[in-house]
Structures are given as C-alpha cells and as structure tokens.
Length: 376
Image 1 (spheres, rainbow, N blue to C red):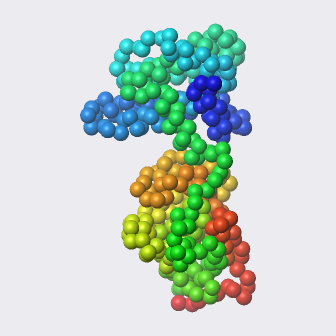
Image 2: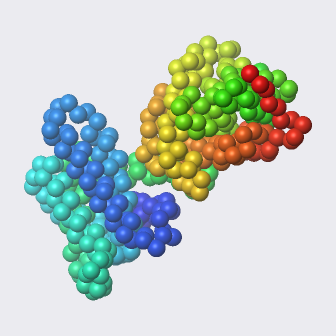
Image 3: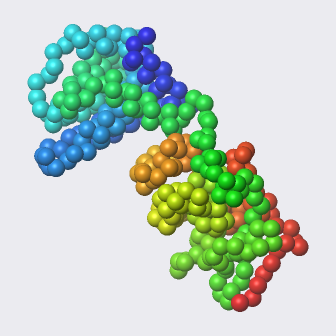
C-alpha cells in the first residue's frame, strides 16, 4: 500500500461530515475553499516578495487540507483513482509556470472537480458525466498533477504535506483518545492541582449587582466576580472554564494561583509555567472563547468547535507546557466547561465536583441549606 492510500484511509477516519445528507457538496465546497486559501498565500508571497517567511509553513497546512478534501471526493467519484495516482505523477512532466500561475491553474481545475458534484439546475447532466469513468478521470487527473506541481514550485512534496496533515488531524480526531499526562505528576503533592475537589458557586446580592463567590471546604477563596460588562452575560461564573482546563488539560495557572499550588520547588516552573504571563494568556483564551460562545447560545447543542478557534488557542500557548496537549483535549475542556457554565448561569449557583483522575467535571444544584445570599 502506498503512502497516498494510507493517507486516504486516515482521511476517511477523520471525516466528520460523512453522515450528512450534503456530504459530497460539503467536500466540494471545502476543496474550493482550501484551493482559494492556497492562492491567497501564494499571492501574499508574490506581492510581498522576500518579506513573507511563513509561506512554506502556511502552504504545508493549506495544501494538506486540499489533499484531504481531494482524497475524500476521489473516494466517492473514482475509488480506484488513488492506486495509480503516484504513477501518473511519475509519467508527467512538471508544468511550466511560476507558483502564482500554477495556483490559478489549480483553482480552475478545482472548479472542474467540484462541478461534478455541484448539482443545481444541471444535476441530471452532472449525474450522466459522473457515470462516465473516462470523463471523471479526465477531470481528476489535471487537478492532481497541478496540485503536485504547486507543491513542487514552493519546495514541498505531497508526501511530506500528507504526513503533516495526518498529524494535525489525529491531534483533533485521534483513533484512540488518550489524555496527555498531568503536568505536575512528578511534583510534591502540595504542588499538585488537587485530584478531587468540591467547589460551591454562590451568587451574592450586592445592591443591583450579582457577585459570584467560590467556597471549598467551608472556606471562601478567589475574587468575588461580577460580569464586568454593561449588559450582564454570566461571565461572573467564568472560573468554571479554568477548572475545566485543569481537568481536561491538566493545566491552569489561574487554578494554581487560586488554590495556592504553584510549583515553587522548581523556580523555572514557578516563573515560566505558573507565573503571571501564563495566567494572562489563560484569561485571554477564556475571554476569546466566551466572545464566540455568546453568539452560539454558549455552545448548547454544539458537538464540535471551529478549528480556526482551536488554532488560535494553540498559537497563544506556544512556548508553554500546554502546547503538548492535542486540539481534541482543548475542545473537550471547552465544551465540558460550557456545559456546566450553562447550568450555573441558569440556576445562579451550584456545586461543581472536579476529578482529575477520571477527567470528569460534574454539576449539582446547591441544597437549600447551602444557599447563601449576602446583602452588601
């Protein structure tokens, strides 16, 4: 089996669109969009010649996504195409033209491929063309050859592009979901985030404001939080997001500060990983995700996050220990945090139980005797 067939099998595993009625059209739209991104990156590099050092990295990612959508469409349009695809490249001469011209040719040929599944008013005509194996091959082959030549024109090879894309997709949709080990396992117990914790979220009345207070083992801790915005939106409960990060990522400088379990025994961890800058980044991530969540009913009914959001988070955490954590764990941490956030916001209080060993975050309403309202 070739690397291309291996990659195609992995692409099938990571296809979350397969159960959608519009599966083929979504793949076609994805192919068109990613080819457009390739053109955009090459345009920037051509326009800003010599001042765009990110081209190789950006194109590796964009070409990988093009390859993913192409392989998925090929599996539907011509399942046997990939078996001879590498031989096809070996028998063809590299097309003439600079990388910008080649990218435009790729866009043109992407239109021919997507036209096979576009439907619309010409659906019967498209169906008849799809039933003709020769026509399908004549459509797929030029796109495949041009895709390879675009890669070569920028110093890349599709085999390497596929490897990088496989790694990216497995970080988001792994075959086996295994959490990254907790970052403080080798530290003294007093410097570990407590493995089990029961935290009460209480809403206090302070005049016209609602203030959230955290309690653990009968003791108040942390700051008393308001929404800090003109139109109340529940952000006063946002510490739940930090607890979600602690459970599902094993990481939260904010929680370490709240619970006073910074890793003081190793100054480099205390300074770099548990310090103020790391905590600011975590708060920034919390605020960034919240701004997206507000427009999506705080992720109610959402099973999958926008990958661009996860990419931004990964960029923000570059250089910190948590960059080793895969995107699927971030997605889980965020969605689980918002599941409990919606309960807290609806009930204005609650008991949250953290279990870092089982990676579980659970919510229960406060019992009547536990509820407290303080007048400011």
